[in-house]
Image (cartoon, rainbow, N blue to C red):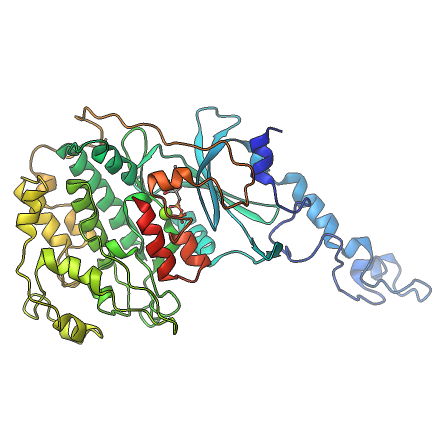
Length: 466
Ligand SMILES: Nc1ncnc2c1ncn2[C@@H]1O[C@H](COP(=O)(O)OP(=O)(O)O)[C@@H](O)[C@H]1O
Ligand SMILES: [Mg+2]
């Protein structure tokens, strides 16, 4: 076993066990005190009925232990490192790590394996903490999804109290592509790449929304791109079903979308997440692909001591400065939002998106039109994913290509992987993620889960993000 393979499994209990009954040790007995005459102890009718001379078969008999069951299960269970060769790790976070791996049989098959830890370290003592809510969400949703523009989950492996989600590997992501166009000098992303990216992103999103799923964390780092130029929406760790209108999606999940991509209705205190919040985020992504920097780069206000969700004044100000101050004429329900009185204190700004678009180098008027429809203040008027696919920008020439790299002279470097990791559970070795802005360590979705959505951690992360 190579060093890397060993690291992959290090830190886990030596006994392989299934998630079923994973809280008990293999030697634990099933506490069934089956008495005389049980069919199961062999003294039932077929074996001659009652026999008072036989000792009572209490817990402790091998037949009733979970160990043989586990042994049988372990014998047929696929081991992650037997099936995959681990090539290195891509990103790390409090949830665990994402590894690049190769199928040992099909040598062309590349995968990204997301490993979720089920334990946490507290004063050097490791506790088994179970499966995180986000892992459960991601597993249950991804298993049912099948669309060319959603990262494909190929299998889930449970081994040594860890969950491994195996996804098809994507060589790039939008954050990496944006970074390539902005460093060392600014080189605009070609319009054909932009158009194909947006079309594929909206196709994947339309599929999610038709399946009653809101993504809630769309941002460049969560949009993967394969080497053949296909967009794949990833990271469904925060995604939720929205078909139960009675349940407030606000409670328990205070901070959701990364603040720069957060829709104005959420900033004004909306209690329900609707698919429209994802379309706002897509608008922010389109703007970022155009200008190569986040369009609304606000500073996040910290959570106060009472853990109240603070009013994100700076973020809303960034939006208002470009889109103009919203009015009830533009957004009829504006005054009903809990934080409206705060917004009413702002200085008035005129709408400025057109000027922003031209200063960012945009020239196509239909692209600007789509941008303004995605960034509509009123979630009820904001374009929906399905309708956006027949937008004039997508139907006019040049036609939308299936491959975002078609007609482009740009080549992007392959995803960097780290091989020098010493301990899979350590918090070190985050150079890649800092370079590429994956935010799992300091406040991305992984950290949000672990730190209870601490706004502080998220802001800290975002400062590091670029
Ligand atoms: N299918 C994949 N192929 C290649 N890299 C991936 C894939 N999925 C995720 N990654 C990389 O791992 C990072 C973290 O994965 P993600 O699913 O976004 O988890 P997190 O909850 O930590 O944000 C991504 O930003 C990306 O860099
Ligand atoms: Mg992510």
